[in-house]
Amino acid sequence: MKSEPRIVEVRQNVFRQNDVTARELRARFRDAGVFVISLVSSPGSGKTTLLEKTLTAMQKQWRVAALVGDLATENDARRLERSGAPVRQIVTGTVCHLDAAMVRRSLEGWDLDELDFLFIENVGNLVCPASYDLGEDMRLVLLSVTEGEDKPQKYPTIFHGADLAVITKVDLAEAVEFDRVAACGALCAVSPGLQVLEVSAKTGEGMDAFLGLLASRAITQGLAR
Amino acid sequence: MHELSIAASIVDLAQEEAEKRAVRIVAIHLTLGALSGVVREALEGSYEMVSAGTKLEGSRLVIREQPVRVYCPVCREPRDLPSIQLFVCPACNSPAGEVIDGRELLVTALEVES
Image (cartoon, rainbow over all chains, first blue to last red; front, side):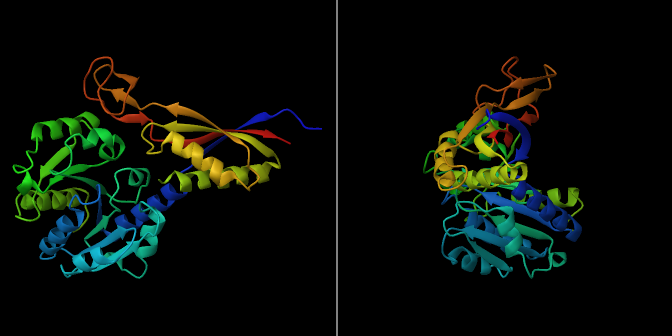
């Protein structure tokens, strides 16, 4: 005889596995004294170009490395290798985001003690990466001037979860009639107090402020000594 | 579309619980935070697909949506945001403070029969 259904209380975080791995990674990064910065944005917002210039510039002073996620191809890793920094590609296949386990796997064989900064470029996607902690210290979200100024309001979760918003391709701002006030208003609406920087990786505009900010955040946390 | 892998995690998690308790699951109760990055409709569709052919086939997902709850530093009260497009206190319009609730995706209960 079948009994009546009854309710059993459980309390299980569905992201548990990823969160546990991310916590382990964060502890490892902390112990090694490496400051970890991830980048998220839609495809084509300029993550790889910004990262290439960032790695090239930071290498003069710091020991830097990068992981780069894409559904397919190793093209981005090849581009980033031009900076001279160690780079590894994470090919996700059909997966639309990086998770903590992928980061852990791709770090195998790297001595984190030998690094000051590690960059993780996520798959170009403003939706799925929002759910996955990668153990990073700082998450950057990029918004290029060629995208709609209201993008933060279309993808509030990812913009809300970022520690810094970087407006990219500002050399094109005038040509595309980029509305700064509208963009900053949209960012502020989904994340009050979010720090916003404008850069052009192409012309170098804003890069000093950007690099200075990364270094000062790392030093504030007692990392990248 | 990461809901497919999330649905698979839910199925694994529920099956583990069912085996531990030697019961059959009729429904899974979930709390879905507005800031979890998970879309309800996509999750429901994915769950049906992923649970097919497992012991959970035919079981239901009972989803409770959790709005974003922030602490308003001006009101000194927790407040629920009516929308995630605007992080301001619905009572006093000041910028929202810390998020207290709304990031979670939790399995809270199982409806089971022996």
